[in-house]
Length: 410
Image: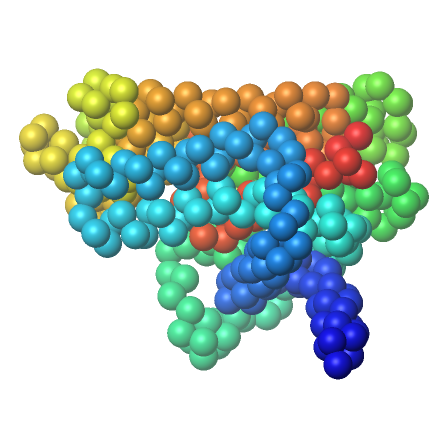
């Protein structure tokens, strides 16, 4: 009887493993399409892998990279800071829910290494990107109107979508397609798939000339320099060189109006900021940064505790008598990971996050995909609270877990 139960248990484990390896591919496929499916499949991967680790007592190699350790320490100290935080209960819970993503990295890394599904994840990721990119072009050129879809599903996307973004806001859209463009170059060279060069060029064009996201412009241009450095400069790759020449010619044509509009908006934002008007995107980020520096001055070592940024910015606006739209300015997300963590955990927490980034940098040394991920994480940390946003944060932990696998980080 025991042997029969053992046989069925082994059979269930085999079937679960066959199904489990598709969790992250499906999550990567839906990352630009459906937040609900992304959450479901990624959390399913986390849950199933955690269960396997517990059942098999496979704890030995959970923390394989230093950046995993630093991420776990950040979350642990956020938990401990509950004892002295100035935040209310809702802010504490919401912030911990955001930063629990640090714990996902070693688990997802273990999941990918165990299931050896990194190529599946890449293929599904690109497939989802092809679908959304096609829809983006259809939307941008007014071939298809998506308003009926937004209204039908009650998608509250007003003010967050540009003419190019389809299902995610313009920042997420731009950053993910920056990575897809970069990743496609890598796969195209590995598999000699010239269609992926074309897809990569279309992604880059979409980011720079159709989508309105200054954060994405910075990331895309830095990734472009990395591609030139790794492939064109060192290997004299003719195909990529001519692709970049083509993109440059497009950039000086009348088709680059979206980027020029963003440049003009930036100039206008700076003018408002000079007059101490913080209503613009740059103005709000500046206000949040000034408050963040003030927070470190007041609580330099351990900070004000988990979820405390909203409380500090509220007090700062009142104390300094700053005239700004409080609905926009009062938030727990200062759109800068360094400001966010230094407020909550002081210089100690800031040091941990800097070590986290430095460890990513060390792991990325002279490695194409790793260097791209480091650029995305570091730039996003300066202009956004990378792990605080739901989709953005899940994207970050997914690509870190994927790219630093031995088979890819070479």
